[in-house]
Image (cartoon, rainbow, N blue to C red; front, side, top):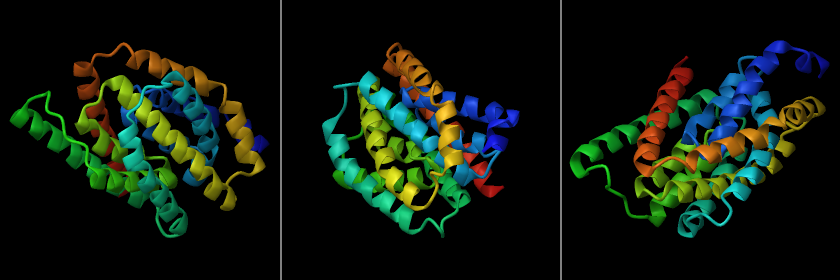
Length: 253
């Protein structure tokens, strides 16, 4: 434990990772929080990085839900959450079989196709085109989000594949995502504990990084509240595109 906490490279990777994840949790940058595990994995095994981040994510979720309290889309949550529970269960059952590289390739490919489809629709229907809610699609993407979130904390892109085309108000989308991932991460605590990932070393590292969680999350929410939809959506899609390329790159290498 002392070796990890006395390593300056741990802080060089972990501090930016926590700040970026916090900004994403606040609603700013959408899926940009995916960088958390890869950044920390530069100085430790990816599984350990994910375990250290999970308690921090849960604290961020509390701050994020409080920040967006009362601002959410109930139908989207009702349609997506059962799938998320199934996805977490599948992740737990296949934890020994599915590698993070496989997950990154799958999520990266889906996210890239998603962005290319959005660009096509902008030319065909215009920037204001909105998709209709679909319970079957919501259940499917909720399952994918739960699964990829369990394996590598990369639930953002699958969630946005379903949620972004509906074009909710940015504040409503951020509040809905806050509740969705708060519930998802809370559920993940059980299998992570059962898999032995919450040892003294990891929990102590989480505690050291905890003070950054509320500050970065509130900062992300502050930024989203000041972004117009015509800025928010193109920016978020651009973020997903960057995420997709990075995930494909990491998965292939």
